[in-house]
Length: 219
Image 1: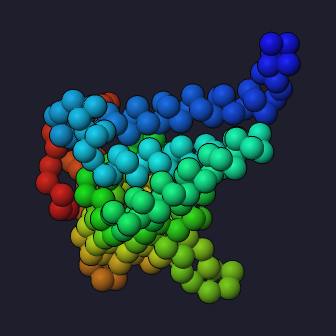
Image 2: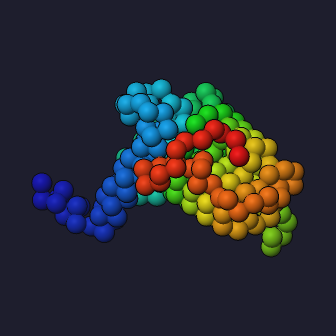
């Protein structure tokens, strides 16, 4: 008991506990977005929604990767996460690596064929449609992965490549190919993507604090 109490006072244990609590809070926000959009019980949504399975696996795997430090437990949990990820990839074709940074409130309504690079960053309350790729691009010093802001809607089939910055409240249309920065509230469509308005994503990104009624998947 004394040994356990001493371990609980160690900085790494405290850090791990704080990260665990944050992970739980993030998952609450993730689940809540499906509850709002699907008007169903959270437990039934969790049982039957591939998008949530992927998100739960991602958040738990990220916590293990960065905050579990006891060697035996760490290796055992990483093995569980590895096989869980491979099962999800086989079922959905979605690759969501634990080193990618993704904020709370992620909404993936149709989890199929989504590829996200390990260096990509997504803000809070983002929507990701099916067949989306967020990947590395560019050459030399300009090579990198997208950095995406809060409340961004990424339509089905959209592709984002390179060291680009996507602002807050941006809406990216279906099948758009984005290789350049987009400012806050931009609505971009086409190949290559061009800005057609600054009406933003408010009509498409719905969460507890927003008041806009749900819209269809398209822009």
